[in-house]
Each structure stands twice: as structure tokens, then as C-alpha cells.
Image (cartoon, rainbow, N blue to C red):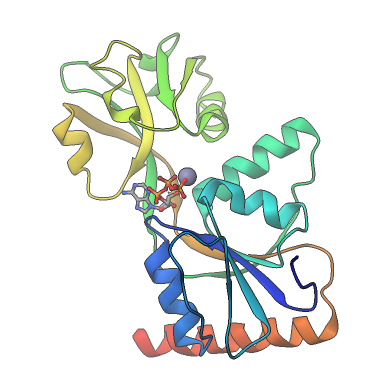
Length: 225
Ligand code: ATP
Ligand code: ZN
């Protein structure tokens, strides 16, 4: 059973955000022992439980009020917000702080041999992505209609595999695109990790703890500048 008196923080179990998130909590003086396969890590010196989940589940855990705080990439947060708004599901949260790590961009990319002069050239084409809402918003603004090809992984191989004409995927260095014979054409969303809180007020003791954590995070980030 989860103890409701303890602050629940949802973080990515293992992936690109995990190490920096663990380091951030550690630098705030929150001690806990991570056992590889465990979902929950109890802090040994603070009334805090860390829930280790897939990053895709974090926005929903906050929007449904299951967890109090979450650390999540803005790309996943924005996609989930738009998806829930469309479905009429709870999509509210409080944004506490951009954390300065996990930087990346969501970009359109086309095969090297394809001529491209702007989004209009994508009209009617099939585009592979894990972010259909963000892609739709961008191309709608450009007046472009496209056919979606939803993939949660291996998006960059879709054109070569004959599944799509172009892709919309996360990029940091561009090396993956290059290795797959693709070139970046439009940046449609810039992202970094963000700390969010559930919308409904926390009990005063929990909110005090959150405020303390925020102050420490601010100090740690400033010391790094
Ligand atoms: P999970 O198993 O938790 O679902 P995942 O494979 O979906 O993990 P990761 O690849 O670990 O996710 O990426 C997590 C987040 O890291 C991304 O949503 C994004 O915000 C950020 N990120 C930073 N750089 C990159 C990059 N080059 N490619 C993908 N994501 C990146
Ligand atoms: Zn994920």
C-alpha cells in the first residue's frame, strides 16, 4: 500500500531522463536506495516515495492525481495534454520548473534524395511519428494534410522500410537521422525536462516539502550556471 502522507514523485525508471533526475533528487539531499526492479523507492531521510515508471505514464499519473510531482520531457507532457483534451479527460497540472536537462527537439525529416521546399511538399504523404498530436498541430497551422503512421519506436527506419514517406521524431545531435539517410527540415517543438505537480492542493506539510525541494533545486541549478 502507498502511504498517502508521503510525497509521491514519479520519475522515469530507466532512460534518458533517469540519471539526471536521480542526481537532482540526490543534490537536494533526498536519500533513497534504488533496487533495480522495484517500482517504489522509499526515501530513507524524507517523507518521499519515488515511483519509477515509463516516461509516457508520468503526465497521466499527475493529471489523474495519483502522484504529487513528476519529472517529464515537455514533448511527452504536451502530447499527452493534447491527447487528453481531445478525449475530454483530465489534463491539468501545475508547472513548477524547467530543469535544464533532457534537451531535444521534435523535427520533421525527409529522405536525403527527396526534394523539399517546405511543409506543403508533405501534403498527402504518410509521416511516421510517436507524436501525432504535436505533428497534427504543426501541419494544421501550415494548412497541410498528411497520413499518420503511428510508431512508438524505430521511427527513423520507417521510410527505408517503406512504411512512410517522412518522419517526425526527436533529435538531439542528428546522428541517428544521418545514419538513416534522412535530413532534418523543420523543428516543430523544442523540449527539456520539467518538474510538474498535480493540480489539486497538497496537504500543507507536503506543500512545504515541495517548496523546500524547489528552493534547493533552484540553488543547485544556479550553482551549476
Ligand atoms: P521509456 O522506457 O521510459 O518509455 P523512452 O524510450 O520512451 O523510455 P527515452 O529515449 O529514455 O524514452 O527518452 C526520454 C525523454 O528524453 C524523451 O521523451 C525526451 O524528452 C528526452 N530526450 C533527450 N534527448 C533525446 C533524444 N536524442 N532522443 C529521444 N529523447 C530524448
Ligand atoms: Zn517512453
